[in-house]
Amino acid sequence: MTDKKRVVTTSARRTARKTSAEFNFSAEMLPVIETGSETISSYRQTAWEAFQRLEMPKTTEEAWRRTDIRGLRADSFAIAKADPTDASVPAELLKPLVGEGHGGQITMQAGKTEIYLDPDLAAKGVVFTNLRTALSQHPEVVEKILGQIVAVDEDIFSALTAAFAEDGVLLYVPRGVQIEDPLHSVLWGPGASRAYFSHLLVYLDEQSSATYVHEYASPDESDQSLHTGIVEIFVGKAARLQFVEFQSWGRHVWNFTHERAKVERDANLDWIFGAIGTHLTKNFSEIDLVGEGSTGRMSGFYFTDGIQHLDHDTQQNHHAPHTTSDLLFKGALKDHSRSVWQGMIYVAPGAQKTDGYQSNPNLILDKTARADSIPGLEIMADDVRCTHGATAGKIDPTEVFYLNSRGIPTEDAERLIVEGFFDPVMQRIPFEGVRQRLQQAIIDKLA
Image 1: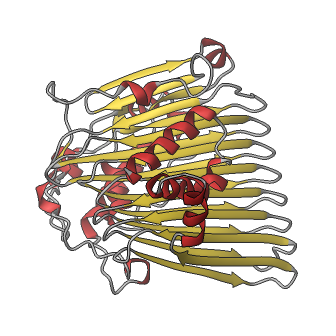
Image 2: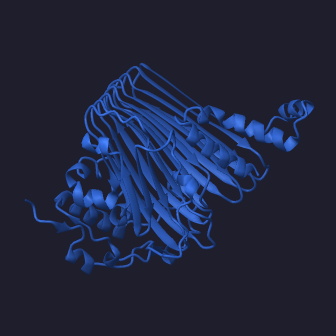
Image 3: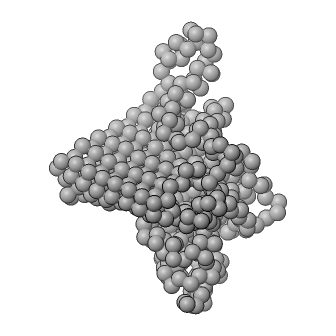
């Protein structure tokens, strides 16, 4: 039996120093997790070394050209720790998504985690647990996916997450297991001047299926906080995954995430995003269709107001023939807020019979709001069908007039039009409970 090894070696701790990005994080702050895996130990060490050498992104880089993060006070954050004065997770975030309960639920708050998994699923070999437990008790499963999909050195934020993340989830579904009831997890991050790091690992083996809903949330605070995250997803041959992410961080949070899915032959991924929170978000999300006949659908909605800035950078990568991708991101903007969507469909040489589509309509509710949409195609095969489109417009006054003429006040009329605008995305969400929660978030924004 392999001796347990600490994730961070003593020599690594002796090399602690302030990074060029001026974060006040040192090697002494790295989490100490007992693990029997040399791979996991090496992963953390490599991430820390990458964090030390990498610098903050600049607007001279294409991916960051429209998102300026110089206002981030990098030296002001302390790693989130348990605090008895913190607000508890709101009850509405823990309600069942369908029926009377969940197939499993994980609630994460600094220093406190609650885990539930249906015993029948556990008996079938399903693993649904928090990251710390996964690293120590299920290293052989973690090794299947950790660092295999998102590299630690994609930028300073991916390195930071890989080195420091203790919060997170491992979902593993063995071959042929079908999970009927949804799985649910919540990362709750109260407090100001704190840094939260999360890492989600999702691995569906061949011919399995699951629905998983994950939420990031916090109350509004007065001072900046930071969240950096990694999501790594593997969907095995002929497997099916529905993955819903909802981000309702407080208005003080600066949020940076790297998310990528690898979809094998004849597998299907239905990936749904909802974003209403944060002061600033930069999200990289990517589907790699690597197996013939694989399908990936990305659906998203965002609603900004005040001075929020949300930047979503999406990639639909077709690496095999007969693959299909479909992206629909819809946004509404109020006040002085701004959205950025950059999308790319890539078709590799030899990926014939590819069908790729992307669309980004935006509804501008105030003259001072701004939506930037940058669709793109990079096609290296000659027998494909790939299309894209992006629009930005105001509420049609004739629609408001029509509703007014039916006795509906202007405020209610505009609310109905916005709800109707988002409805095509809402209809892609698998559970009524989730739809209602997201629809209520839109109503709250309009109010």
